[in-house]
Length: 126
Image (cartoon, rainbow, N blue to C red; front, side):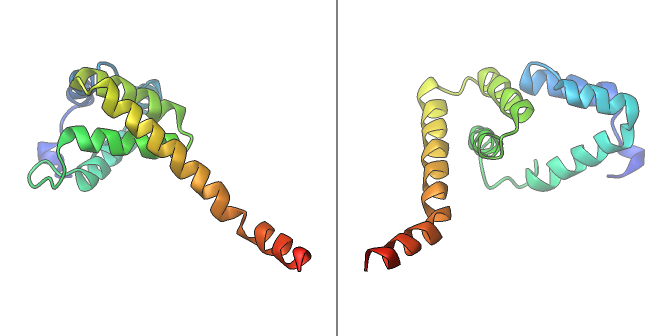
């Protein structure tokens, strides 16, 4: 990020409030102890979700981020994406379908992770 064009922390926070309704408390605390990391986080966001040439619309990005936060067990990110989805007006149906997909993916992961157990049981049954 070019420091000549670097926004102030307050400008970053204003953008976060507009996009998500609030600033995640972890980001507020981070700004107090290591402001440079807030800028690194902003740079990473711009890399992951470019404004100039987005392949995905903002609603889809939010739902993907929400799904990843759920699957990764990140309560702060889940809360932030729930707030962002509310601000964006994403429908109840789309949010719940996202939750159901994550639930199914996690159940599928358990089945996949249990493959050695199934193999052992299969050998025992023979």
